[in-house]
Image (cartoon, rainbow over all chains, first blue to last red; front, side, top):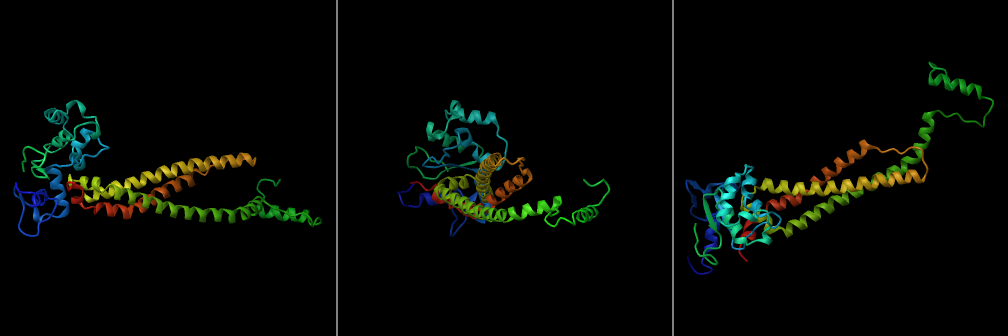
Length: 135
Length: 171
């Protein structure tokens, strides 16, 4: 996907609504991100984009389950327990939901956070350190 | 003792007339005594209240400073929260709650210690009545919480402006 320094991260930041573009437009489905205000952009990130950060970026004070459901809690939505169980079982976290990030492999929890609800997963570091990159 | 139905002024005139021949005696009603004692205590209270105001001011800066520092340390955390969808409004509210909790803990400990010391002083001085001004204490507690909210205003604004990319950027 391009050598280091080629703007991979910047592109991903723009695609995920974390950064703004100087020119051109970014579309997610029917939505033009460049036309959204700060607040709408925040809600879009919360509701539709899942982030897989290179350096995990889990909150150390929250348990795995709380980290995974964080965007939902920020949105004030109720959490579908069955969904959560299925999801965490899929990434092999099922029995460790009450653990803090320091006690588990960060990658699993990060991966669980991304597909929960959001329609798009955005690894913000491109392909390094990961076998497949999906945008 | 005045008979029931006799007014205060009337009773006083009667007493004055009866004691006219004894110039060394002074007449003092309950109000006079109360006034006399308060005039001794009031200046001290005024000093305490001005100290109290000063302490609140210092506490305000203390809380504000603590929050500002903790926000600087948590740039990554706050940026991450913003990235996964915490709105600016929610960031501000989070910081405000932190300030209120700090203020509440301070107020609770302060009121508990202060009440205990007041009680201990009353016992030591062998004053007959231990009086706890509950209403006043409650008012001060509310005051402390409001002060906490005020103290959080600037740090909260700053936290809400945290740059997300600094948190998210790989390092």
